Every structure is written in structure tokens, then in C-alpha cells.
Length: 105
Image (cartoon, rainbow, N blue to C red; front, side, top):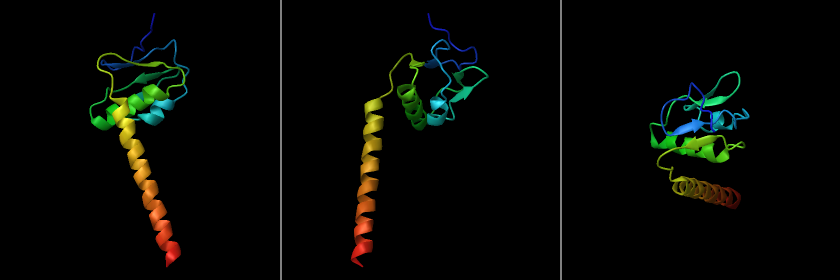
């Protein structure tokens, strides 16, 4: 049976204290939404914006202990990461073009 942190903000994201190993990845992924006490991480604030929702989804997927859970509608993770991948690819293409221009001058 899951043990939800007593400071967890009410809402769809929550952390199971029995699974949390306090790696801190969630705080790095979604600093506005996750905090830690002396033992465990917890959801300080549920996501209010699309960006916070994306960050919380990222935190959930990257948690090494699989301690972050989402009740209710699952975040559209594929769409979030597809957009991020496209952005990275576009940035890389710009860097390549910029480097070519610099060497051709």
C-alpha cells in the first residue's frame, strides 16, 4: 500500500514515501513543484501551467525509484518530448549552419 507524504499538495501528482530514495531528480526537473524534507521529496505545488505540467511529467518519467505517481489524466508525454526533440534538432541545425558560415568567410 502506498504512503503519500503528509505535505503532498492535493492533486493528481504524488510521491510514495516507501519508494522515494531521495535522489532529488524531481526537484531538478520541476523546481516549482517538488521539495524535500529531511527524509523524502514531496509535491509542494501541483502544476498550474503547461510548462509545469511538462516538468512534472518529466520528473515522473525520470524518477529512478519510480516513486512519482499521477492519478487522473496522464500527461501527454509523447507530445512534450516530441516538441523538445524538434527544438533540439532545430538548434543543432542552426549551430551547424552558423559554423559553416564562419568557416566560409
